[in-house]
Structure formats: structure tokens, C-alpha cells
Length: 348
Ligand code: TYM
Image (tube, rainbow, N blue to C red; front, side, top):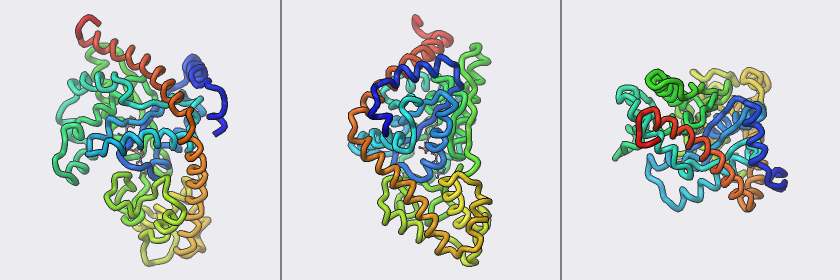
């Protein structure tokens, strides 16, 4: 929070980091639902770690959110909420360029060119599209092409690394394949990005059904912990997490997905490995295990919520986002013009 009280120096610091040629890391979380404990562990926490060693870009992919139906008013509110949450979770605006995707028109422009270099066959292999399209009616073309917009988000900035949960790995690989194809056709243009997947917590599972991913767009939200849930709700959801009946605390994601998920949540938040967590809880019964996991989650989230409440009302958010827009527009424009020139468009 201190960082918000300091003078406005984001731009200078961001520029400095660029000058020393640090590797670049980039990621984003769709504002299609409220951010969850899965979002924190799989994505945001990674960025908090990497911001110390890389030049970091963190954005709100709002254009991705309308691949499924959204309430415009809620979407607008959530975009700002998520920026405040990024910072409350530990993203430092002086170490990250923070921006909103739709404020930079080049994302969609480059995406079109990339779409024309992506084969229907490879786009059709995206497992997330297959899963999501099965679950809803009136599937849009946007839901199908969204991994290509994601490729554009990444390739525009020559990101070296893209920290994501396991469910997004295939999309980063698609970005890499498109970049490689483009480079071979037109000469070196894009950096080939690499996904960074956390060793622990790459897929936090739903507490009420530990065989499926904890998802911000889950219809009931029963097994989903949202970052802004109050203490009572967090405890209730964890205490009613589905487990098994043998009452042995063992880390075994295949045979004991519920218990393993609780151990993963605990070990990610405590920054220890899952085996260490298993050792710590070996004499616990499930009730006591859940209680201690709940204590840990509550402690983490209440701290984030306190920071969030300060930030959401701060007038610095606009300044941070203006700065992010300014920095990213320059980079994205340059890359888009280079691409337009290479493919033979207009008078570029
Ligand atoms: P999204 O919004 O579905 O998820 C955001 C990030 O959080 C991770 N994540 C999880 N990790 C562990 N356990 C979970 N239960 C869990 N749920 C979500 C996701 O893997 C992801 O890293 N298309 C992207 C957003 C995006 C993007 C990008 C990401 C758009 N452009 C460019 C990286 C780079 C998406 O829908 O993620």
C-alpha cells in the first residue's frame, strides 16, 4: 500500500527496467467473474514472485470476457476491482506495467493478422473451447478464436515468459506455434513465449467437486473461494469441502483429490511443497486439517482485503492505468506496424 502513497514514479521506474534488458514476463486474468483462490495461486502469486526478476506486464483481458455473456455494468466495475486486487495481492505498480486490454486497440488488430495464420485444425484442438462450448448454448465465434487474441496479447510485447495455470498452457503453446510460423514466413518478428506453470497449485480444484477446476465462472460458486469472500463464508466453504471416508491425510491427487486439494492450497499459501504439508498434517483428522487450512486462507485473504479496501478508493488507480496504457500503446503500435508492413498492408 505504501507504494500508492509515494510520488508518481511508475513510468520512470518501468522505463528503467526496460533499459536494463530484463527478460519480460506477461499475464492476465479475464474479468469474466470474481477472482478466486485459484486465480491467486495459479497466476497472481507467480507474478508477485517474478516481478522481482523480470520486467513485468500484467493486464486485464476485458475483451476476452465477452466471449461469454456479460452484464456491461458489472464488467466495467470488475475491471477496476481486479486492478485493485492485483495490487492488493502484491503486484507492485513500480515493477509492473498494469493496463486494460481494450484501451489498447492494437490487440484486436494484430489478432486479425494472427487469425489469418492459424489453421482451423489447430484452433479446434483447444481443449478449453471443447469443454466450454459443450456447457453452453449459442457458442460464439469469439469463444472459438479467443486463444488467437490471447496469442496477440502475448506476441505484441515479445514476452519471454507467460505464467499461467495448467489450463492455459495449451494456449501459450498455440501462441508459440503461430509466432514460429509467422517468423518462418516473413522473417524474425516475434519472440517465442514459454509458459511458466507453478510446481504446486497449477490447478486448484473446486471444493465441492475436487475433480473439476475451481473456476470464477462456476454457476453455483459453492466450491469456489472468491478473494473478496468474508471470513464466515470462507470457513464454511472449506469446512464443507468434499473429501473421502478413510480419514488419512495423504497427498494423492488421483485417489484422494479432495484432501490433496486442501494440502495444495495450504502448501501454496505457506510456500512449502505438498509433501511437507502432508508431513505437517499426518496426525490430524480431516476436521482439524480443514480448520487449519481455513485459518491459513482467512489470514491470507483478510490481509488482501484490507489492502484492497484502501486501494479501491485511491485516486492512484487511474494514474497507474494511464501510465500502463501509455507504455503499452507505444510497444504495441511498433509491433503491429512491423507486422502490417511485413504482410504488405497499406502504406506501412
Ligand atoms: P483465466 O482468466 O481463466 O485465468 C487466469 C489465470 O488463472 C489461472 N487459473 C488457475 N490456476 C490454478 N487453479 C485454478 N483453479 C485456476 N483458475 C484459473 C489460469 O490458468 C490463468 O493463468 N485466456 C486467459 C487470460 C488471458 C491471458 C492472456 C493469460 C488472456 N490473454 C495472455 C496470459 C497471457 C484466461 O482465460 O485465463
